[in-house]
Image 1: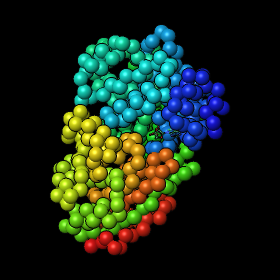
Image 2: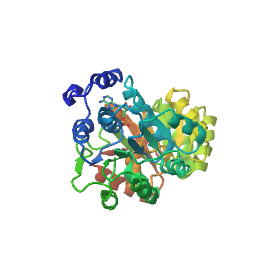
Image 3: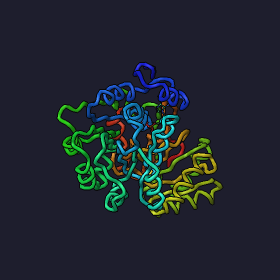
Image 4: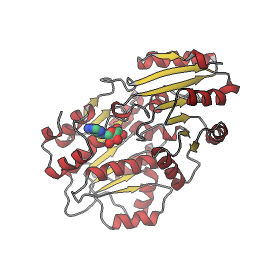
Length: 372
Ligand code: AMP
């Protein structure tokens, strides 16, 4: 579907073309008309499918430029996602004099205040910092017309449920509400549905192309003591150019990145124990290929849009199936190909690997030659 079929204004069409988008993705083709019509929606789509533009484009069409007041609120679970959504929105807003401000913890509150003072139409926020700014009287949501909850299930999982209730109770009830998520367990659906109008639309494009279809998936049986040397030889022998390695704890991430460096591999660690500024500069160095390997905790498993990741390694086996899908979804973004390798250190993990395989209906082959 071409973007001109949505009858968008010319400036917006130009900005979309500038971004290099030629055709609307599935989630965009199905969501944009629903949002333009003013309906509430729950959208289930994989990360990397173009979700951000699926809500940004119709919001840009609907938001009124003048006067400049906050009309749309996008709530996201993490700081990184706040910045990423803000950037994508700002690029799509190019030339339209519609401005977004990212509001997230770990960064100067006064800088965010002065950005808000300059005028914003959209706020992209993590719940904690938003409530802080509301408390100080710097943000008021009384004129909000549109609310987007991005990675909605994650926000509920992360314990933001009461915060979301509070924030939404401060928004007018006649607003339009949109919920986006790659996974939507049924208990979460029942929790989120009460924030939407009863006639909301369900858009589910997750089954159309099961999340992980373009990803070649493997597992390796590894002796726990040989995980680092196995990883190093995998990275070297399979020529992994841009590789994201997931582990469970911050300590393992730090320890592993140092160990890989000893094997002559340029690796950096990233996790929630680091300052926001440092986290951002590490992501940038990985994005610009200065580091070949990024070792991360689950902090990076969701929502992050880093292009061209060739390989995902699950150094620590993911605790939940959904985490597996989110982690490996960092590769093969937007139709590109990618590879994921999961380390299994015991029989239980191998059994779980088999269960994941049937759950996502994809083949996960054993890489016997690397096993130990
Ligand atoms: P998201 O799912 O929002 O994280 O988007 C993943 C990536 O796809 C981002 O880099 C977007 O800029 C890009 N993207 C979104 N929509 C399109 C499109 N219609 N054509 C090409 N790339 C797109």
